[in-house]
Image (cartoon, rainbow, N blue to C red; front, side, top):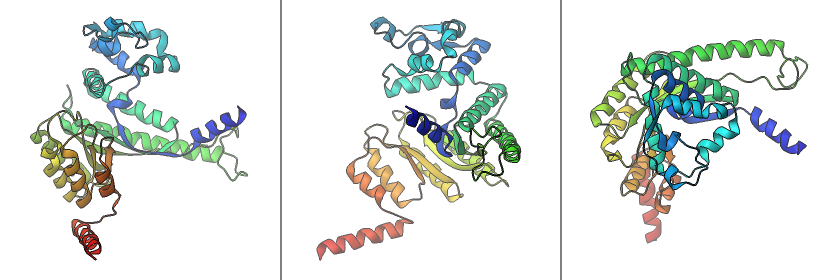
Length: 328
């Protein structure tokens, strides 16, 4: 048991990197309920109105909505208990569509600058607490009550900038107060390592559920912010419900972002699709830096992805060499 505890502490204190964190997906459960209560938002009882450990068919098929205030009151007793919260939300098996339906509830509550600032700040705090030293946060620009799409992204970037400054100041002070005789930077009580500061960057997303016009707006915004000095914007992402639209419709938009210097990530192979092979092939002859999910990818596509590539020309020439070798 002691070794397990030591290993747990070691892993907890290890510096970590998170390259694809969904901002809305990072919202704290208690924050979601608090914002819903403040804004008198109705949350779906299908996902938030009952304990998923129940096997009642009525409970699992409920579609009526209950008020957020009732939901918050019903869950107050478990919000402070991490295990209870995990059991409440993570015990019930969910389909992919269930997850997207739950995601759709969050924008109802995060609908203005104050709530956006709150969930961004809390997400950074939570990653920092887990000793993440580099974080790429992603979100689709939205028009809120008091924010344009540009204002949405700039609000997130502002919170990130302020948080980084605070992290640098904290780290500097903790280093100064740490034990100078130790080869490791320990906190003043010599029990824990001084946590390294969190560096943050942002990925502008395209939601495939939207239109190509909306995607182009996001590309324009990403390029504009990326070209600013000391920008925290590093790339673009395309994701969203894989059952909506054809992702290939957005490849020209992603290509334009790439030519502007932005790095790309694309959700691919979430569900079986005839488009998956084409997308993977495009990734192999383009400069796609990250493929996300990829649970429904064929062996052929896995082989394609395993081939190092720097350009479409080198990709084609390697294939030509292989064909020549087979003929010989």
